[in-house]
Image 1 (spheres, rainbow, N blue to C red):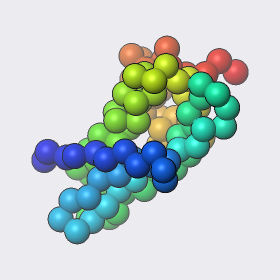
Image 2: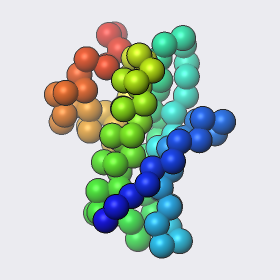
Image 3: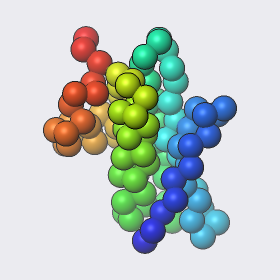
Length: 94
């Protein structure tokens, strides 16, 4: 499946629409130079197809391109970042 992830900065979210169904990765900008991924939602019909992973990759690529440190309030994103060591450099030091 080829997905097109859209970034809607005005709504602070990354989205995917596929066959009338949608998924989103929401974020906030709590401080200068920081992005906090707060919520991931994938409609039932799109689950199990890697849609959440694609949203995560898009959000983390955006963080890297914009020199942002990452917080992962969303448990899905926390797990994704923990499972992918190549994103550890983005994680905000506590």
